[in-house]
Image 1 (cartoon, rainbow, N blue to C red):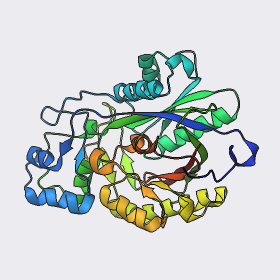
Image 2 (cartoon, rainbow, N blue to C red; image 1 turned 30 degrees about the horizontal axis):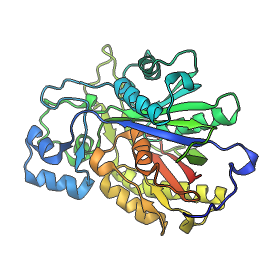
Image 3 (cartoon, rainbow, N blue to C red; image 1 turned 45 degrees about the vertical axis):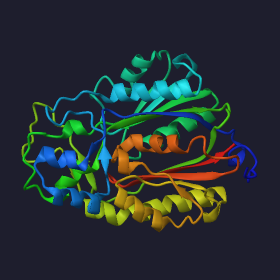
Image 4 (tube, rainbow, N blue to C red; image 1 turned 120 degrees about the vertical axis):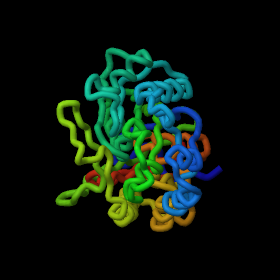
Length: 354
């Protein structure tokens, strides 16, 4: 057992906030690259391109690729993840004081998806917040929940994150002549949701959430990714629903991730070799490997899932945390990083075993 390396409680005399349990949900069976290639009429070279350029082997989609029918909503996935997290924490919905959801792809503009989730899990008479954000939305939700708990009026907050991107797929489209920059969106993403129980009350196996960082850094910068929302009265045939500047993302994200790690370590007085677990950004398998090499944390064990789940946006931090919860011994430390290219947001969090 590793000896604790700090006194309990967050720096500055604030009470500690604990991550007690995590739950996740994936729709349907995994879809491998061969299945995607067969559906869209590509040959084996296309499969090799995915492996070499993206590094994602499988993903789960909430849409049937044959019929285009969406068979799972974000609210359904998030409610499943929430139920699993509450069960792991030995709680019911009556035991939570607030609910926070981060997503870029709500089921509807109204009602807010977080309220649909609350209804599904039986939560009522409590504050419910929905944050509209890309890959950093889950960390922003952790930040909001942590601040609510530090304020002293709440003891337990359920944090949710997830995205359902496959509803933007046109399964009837002929993709054989689509340039690689647009094909990225077909192979990169998956659908999923996750949930975490945060509390001021410790529990066996819990993690102390030591710091959360969120920084908007896109002043004067063009968006790296755009997700449109077109109403029926405003058709936009000249514009596609999802677009991104993958080259810009490749260039900027590693530096942004490095900045977040440096800020977390400086705030907490940790050295690079103090970090035992690294939960890096999960944009794609290949890019994640480059980011890990860039961060320079020599003792850290990498916790990644993007090769199996695809880029699931705001669900990813919970899928990573689920893999690490229960493995962190007292005094061991970890950092998680998320970077959003829509308007260049960098975020991260630091945790320690208790």
